[in-house]
Image (cartoon, rainbow, N blue to C red; front, side, top):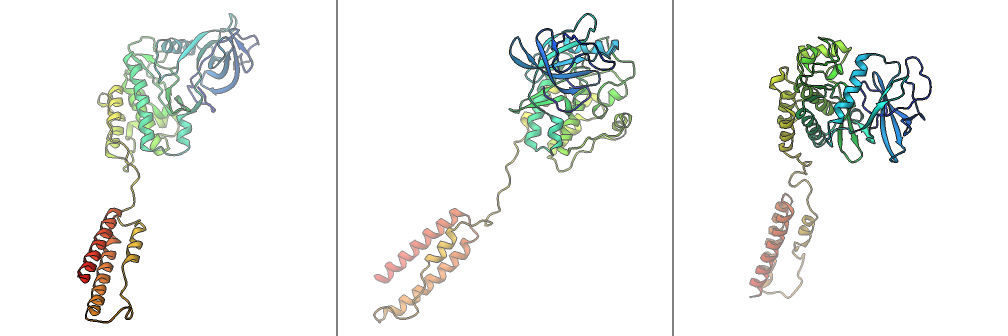
Length: 384
């Protein structure tokens, strides 16, 4: 996983064999530290609330990995419990849309810094994509299907992510989408909450209303957060902003503003995902199936008929014969008739040309053929 800026609840993983003394409030490890005599830490990819994420080299298997290390200054039993819970949760999940855990452990007996080693996703976060500008319907649908598939897989195993947000969605160079950071994920029905009663855990801007109210957690919370993420891909702005308390409470007083220029089926889908009542939201498996059934994105509209006429129209007007200005052959009874016929043909040709200017290319060709046949019939009649 590759993240270039700090982001609360950042994913990643690592292994530790720290040898340097810890600095108060900082990680006892850092770039160039060798963990478990195997992982050489490199640059910092991101910093979360209690852990740091590094790019690292796995010397045993000669590959790049991501290493997440709990900071030495974090002595909270709750933070340690969450870290261990993340390792156990991810170790039991195996899906192409989820970041894979590769290894885990604790540094040394004195520091006891837990570490987590995970696959490295070279690419960028969805937050970075959103910062570049609005996504089109095709891109939002592509990302939404992959996220819905991954979330559905986790929900089938009774795992609720609880922190679905753009910063936790990773996109690699081939367009694959992976959901990261299960640091505060929870098994449904697990008595070990790791949080105080009535306290909301997650990122304030993306919390579900029931999380804000401190109500029992269900899989519907992830669907609400996903709805806000997809909405943000269209609008490039967070729907609920302000201080953490303001952002969290705002969704209790007003629904999100869904752009009216979106297709009706997308408006309805976003409204269903962000419904205040969690029991009315669709589940992730249904969402993935519904997204695959959405009408394909129409191609850009072409020019209206007659807007861009083919060059054949000009050719048609050029080949229409013009009556001679004076005698060009022997005089006789047939010459005036021939001249009159020529004038009629010219008039006919001009009329056909005017009509042809408003026709499509195939109509122009048909008109050209018809004119040629008329000319042949006239010439044959005169010759007889």
